[in-house]
Length: 462
Length: 117
Image (cartoon, rainbow over all chains, first blue to last red; front, side, top):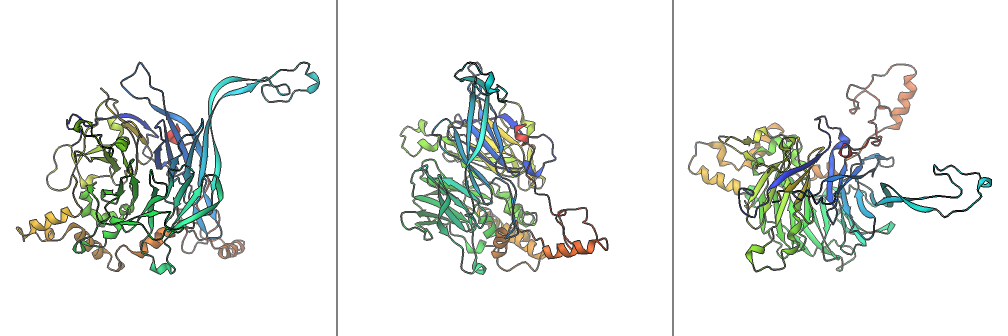
């Protein structure tokens, strides 16, 4: 495994855990999205109750150089509220499906958060001074009797306790008939896309009363519906390029320069299936739950129920690598279908450093690590190293709470005699799922969300 | 380990040639699971994982509240006691006429997230 002693392997240690300890999980506390901002200083979570919590990494403490700063609560606010669409008799959940940060342009931070129907642009700003010494107002806000004012003074700004305020700056509503699954900010930093089951819309961040429909896969006759859009993302460098994945396991790459409506893809990525292996479950488990471009934009990663695939954008007919996340579940598909777990949507992410990778390095010792991470059941999560082809399974659990103690790798015993320290497939807790994980853009710090807790792990610094 | 999908199935079939006595090993795990499912639910749709799931996904969130039934129930309530909702307030079916009080409460969370606690 990774961590089994290779000189270069990352050794993960527990750093922090946020959230309630008790097992009785309130629906509202279920974490539904996790995202670092572009610098990694801020970490946002969204939950089923429509709330956003933002953590900030504290500045590195010179005396405690053995660990990176901890993440503490910076701001929390109610992003979305439950709604009822009376016309369609449709209940609109307040659950935050996705959060995406804008790159920072000034002192304030901006993020987009979305539920099933409405996207909101939030401004998070700090206030650490306030004006004091008004002529007509007392310090507590009461108005002074003007007749008692005998001299004039100029109010001055004095420091105050830091206050972090979140305010909704834009509300992008009424553009989606179906449920929004993705939002993605364009590399032009002016536009973004939002995708629902059947359509993708392009917005300008400044304009809320108009959006352009760029993909529409709704068939004229709904009886002919065979696939839905499951995720979409803009290319990190090419502002006219985006991809969207489907429930049938395909990814389409589209170029907005080709036409106003990108119903015809520029590239179609699909791995041919062996027809003799086809079963009732084939299509369900091939449905892609997440798609993420590599930081360089040369590759993209997709997650389906049992595996993670890496695709080279230059090759459409098959992925360049496939990693099995939990292949032992293939012989449990019947029960996973019955308990609905087969429909769980796992996300995946790249480590932060692959930005440098595709710009060649001739010295082998300099090849940066490229690692992909995804979650599984029993609060396990998995990492795959693209260079060494090694993988590791770790667990997010309060039992591994000792900071600076390296996490012990886990192993699932698929069949046969279970070794000591292994866990058998039938003992896995399928209610403990890790669907959302995030990797700090620059450092080896990861955020892993269990049902209602957020774990932060760091690599062991020397 | 980087391995193409279906490797598990191939290993199974290779094993079968040597051990015909183990009937189950001749079937790829996915097919065996499919057989189990069809045995339990013989009327399962012929379209594998097809439109039924998609339509269900698209219709998520649909709640039915019949104002006609509600108004009639309100009128009747003056005369007789209607059966009250069962212990599970989220399930409003059968003879019970739904009233706004029975629909699940959709209040926003006034409580701060426990992550911030």
